[in-house]
Image 1 (cartoon, one colour):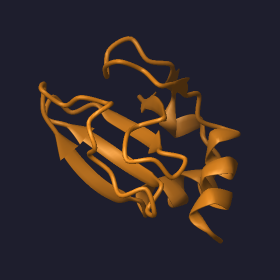
Image 2: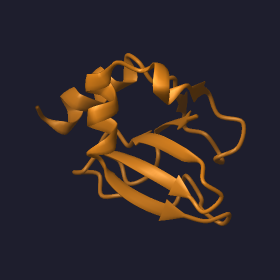
Image 3: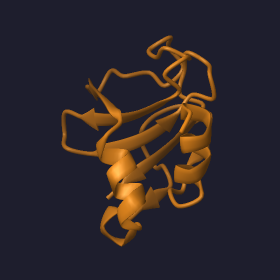
Length: 95
């Protein structure tokens, strides 16, 4: 499955916000309640570790990769879909 197709499938289940300005106050999805195939997809994504200075609009991503899992230094996890851009176009927090 191509990244664009996989992103579409995951976004059917994971609540996301479009073009958020920070990692605070994002839509949340309870990871344990996701279907097993979606959890498997999420667990196989490339992981980027970020800190409190992470900026969602900086060129932090390879647009060709398109989907990522972010792990914040405070333990929070986020699904990111860049839609082919180099910034985080859609982000949702996994709790």
